Length: 171
Image 1 (tube, helix red, strand yellow):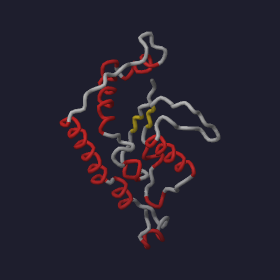
Image 2 (cartoon, one colour):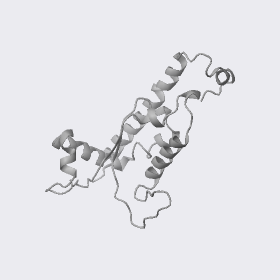
Image 3 (cartoon, helix red, strand yellow):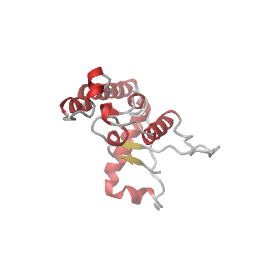
Image 4 (cartoon, rainbow, N blue to C red):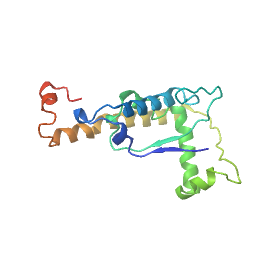
């Protein structure tokens, strides 16, 4: 088992109004993340095709303002996870709490005990509603915070984007 940890995704893949170019690198990051979201066991390298499914890998992402990301990435059931994934998220979080952040590597790579195992939990309506409400609150928070809008409204950009500001095409 391994974990992909992406720190400050919004800084590398996000867009801050007209001041950030949408480069090929941004497009590749977004395309790869969308591929993982839609087909997590079949992520391929360019010009290569592996017929075997890849094992699923938990992805932990940090950021300050996910509203700057490619919109489909932050839709419910895409990057933030679906209701069913929340149960496993809780199990992984509990496991990390038990072994400690500093010991994750020792417990994943060449561990004598083998990879961690997680019990499959029964899905109850109450649990699904709890996780569903959590997803709704996360999405509402992304819409409410809009740190990029606040930053760009108060940023002193000089004349750098004067034309985009005048026509209202700042995003």
